[in-house]
Image (cartoon, rainbow, N blue to C red; front, side):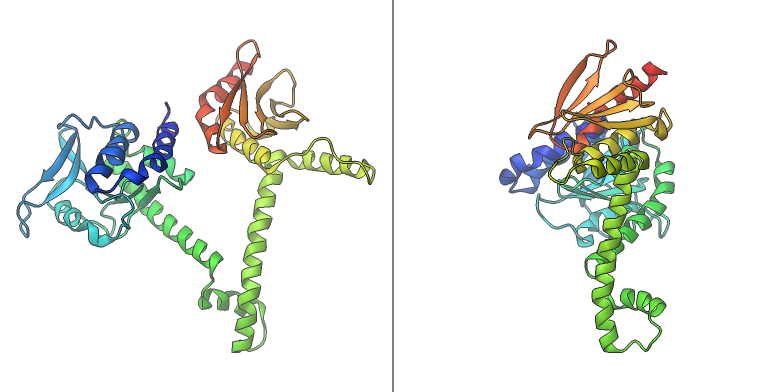
Amino acid sequence: MDFIERIDVLAKRIPQIAASLHTEEATKNALIMPFLHTVLGYDVFNPNEVIPEFTADVATKKGEKVDYALVKDGEVQILIECKKYGEKLSIKHAGQLFRYFSVTNSRLAILTNGTEYQFFTDLDAPNKMDEKPFLTLDLLNIDEHLIPELKKLTKSSFDVESIVNAAGELKYLNQIKKLLNEQFKDPEEEFIKFFAARTYDGVLTSKVKQQFTEITKKALRQFLSDSINERLKSAIGDEQISKIEDEDKCLLDDEKPKIVTTNDEVEGFNIVKAILRKNVDASRIIARDTQSYFGVLLDDNNRKPLCRLHFNAKQKYIGLFDSDKNEIRYPIETLDQIFEFSDELLKMTAYYE
């Protein structure tokens, strides 16, 4: 299994066993140890790689332990503090991590409840753990943008300097995204005044501010909707959009189009396109929808099929081709699973080149 697939398998397991996770130990055994092993790549049964109940000399408190220490090249690299499944994580849970951070060589720490993983380093002050994580992974709501950063933390790819150097931008990027999300849901007064002051020439009275609260909310919703529509258009290409629109104009009033391109098909094509851009220019990746499947071609050439998306039934499939161009269908539950076939898709472009 590739990296994304290993994460997905663990994430899908959580709802199946959640009702049985009543203690911290149960959470460790069922969720955290599998994460350390299958996702980060450490041998949880080798004390030279994973040290449970790790103890170090701490001046302020003796005999205190952190749940795990991950070791690479003979040095403690990551400290981990665990909480029970479902327990809300907060900085108050990280007391041991703060104390141990300054007395070990570790520059990384993880606070987790088995589903949420908060990653910390020492960006604000050397050898002192930050109070805010630079990366937060939620297995129940995975942000695809975090996957490349998480991969840097695996045993096989671990490079502490590279991780810490990237952590600064990642920390503030995530905080800004969080703030933007909050403002989209419920804009604060200062946020509203920012736009009102730049678009309204009169005095910002209480009544005007109240009006601009609703106007701002509406503008944000429309902006988001327009952005999504633009993304969908760019995914299947302006020329194809124009072609579809021209075909629609030719239909009689009582006719219904036989081919309907769904949002799932467009989003699926967008994912395929993102994968294949590693090998070929995006302009060469062309979508061609039919009544029975949504095809993806190289150079708009029927003799160069890359894949087919069979999304018209309840069970979705992605169709891939062997060297003889025979199609093999693979069932998928979510669009994200298309990423699991990245290697096969990239091989197809290499085959035609």
